[in-house]
Amino acid sequence: MLHKPLFRNGPADDEIHGRYVPAAPRRRLLELLARRDLRFVVAGHTHQTRQIEVDGVEHVWAPSCAFIIPDALQETIGAKIVGAMTLDLTDTTHHFRLALPDRVAQHNVADFPQLYPEFTAKFIAERDQLPRP
Image (tube, rainbow, N blue to C red; front, side):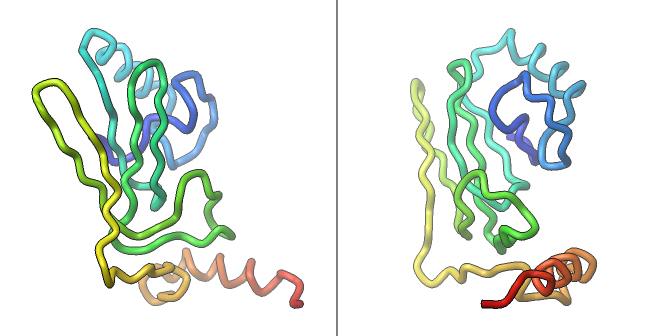
């Protein structure tokens, strides 16, 4: 389990983005893990949920339990929802399940500019430059 996902689509991704583990540390970590029976990698950080399989390993992005980030500030890759991820383990299997508890608010960080002033100022500036219908 990591804070940031290892990559977007695969180990060879050369995309430089703060969303993912940087290439050099990712290579070192993957070299160490290659000697193990790795079945899944779980990460957060993205405020999106996503599940993909790469080279027989399931890569899961757990959703945020606080808020989503609007499309104007963050590309949609997975699903932008507020929720949780559960993991069931047995001796031989694992299973992830997206949990969307009743009455959990689907907050958008842009609705709370006082929490991250620099972040939401950028969003507001970009939004205000969009043509109005």
